Image (cartoon, rainbow, N blue to C red; front, side, top):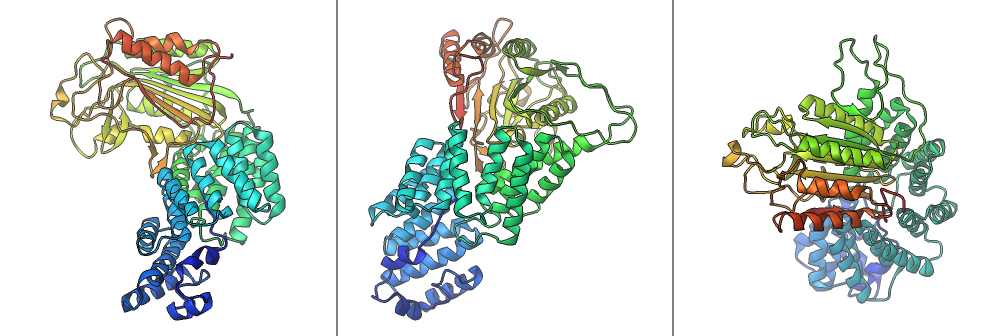
Length: 572
């Protein structure tokens, strides 16, 4: 459950200038101002009233508010924001600020949402609804202590607030308090066993604990409930609960190795219309993972080429014949896996001498601290796709996943791409088809139960510029713009929870290839990766300081994090 609008009429009461709510509704039209009116009829009725140009001030603000409610039912959050903004201009109210804040939340704009909820609380008596909604926005930002404080305030005002128990449990889970999370979510289920949302959240907890059968059972019951009794609260984005149910059950099936059922659930996730940022992110993940499990179920041709990557362990024998590859048995969660690629032998731009050395150095450091590493050097597009997809499949059963890439990388139309060695960097719409889309990797890893660390020692410039033909002794193909900040996953959602992404240099700057055997960034990274008891963000701070010093301020590493707590790659 994302946001609440319980006691809608109570919140909206200050909007009315007449003392009698029922009389005011009769004046302005019951179809427009009744929360049970279907969305299209509500919007149409409100449109007709606005067109009359009879009402002004508070009454007109009320009409805009109720039309925004109609747009909210349809999941059109831009129109919700436009109408509530007009209502606030005419007559500020708790209801309008709360509704607009909820729309900003569903668009993934959490800071603006929090400001609106703050303004709502200033305008009147604090309500459990607004505390709950602000708690959701804090949770969206990753500030879980503040989210828990707001849920505590909600529960104090409303001890039977099912969704506040559920969402407080989600926040506790993010902080690693699985026992506290399970207690809160179980309480939510006891308060209302007909709701699918708490069961979906318990599905995630069972997956964290490796109890995949319980996860699948809870996911199945949640899907049944969501189909039998779709959520009626108008603040729940259309179809969001069913999409969430399918994606969580699919991830549990895939982690168990049941690729057939996982494929069916990913297809079901994609077949449903999504309106909010969270649902679109779930669908971006489903699209990637559907492709992965479909590949896993496909027969391998008799003449399939041997992989060019260098896995840490010997690969399983290839299947022959036409029978599908059998799904693996259940694998306990908790393993740590990494993908390391170094591309330097480019065919169409000047080669980079060090990425192969960098990849080998980082791969060794990761193996030394217990990671299972798949390593690839100077990969063409087909090889790079294959090793990346194999890694993403393995990540379904991992607790920590690390990606390290050294070589050329570019931004095209706001999306980031990694460059195989055989790509001809020529202007044209089909150019990106020959590259590896970074957003695809991020979407494939977007799962709240796993820690993802993506590290790119890549160039930051755009090859679409006029200087495309000249690549010097840096990891930069000369151009005017750097890589886009990775704050979004393909369909517009925020950076997946539990993810840290780091670049060897700041946006718009050049990542140096270095004068020695390694780049300045990879040399520092290899030295600090294995430091015992060093939290990963502290480790990157040390790497940054060393790179800045060794390059005399020419290169400043940069990172963006939505990690849910402290992460240690080496035991304390």
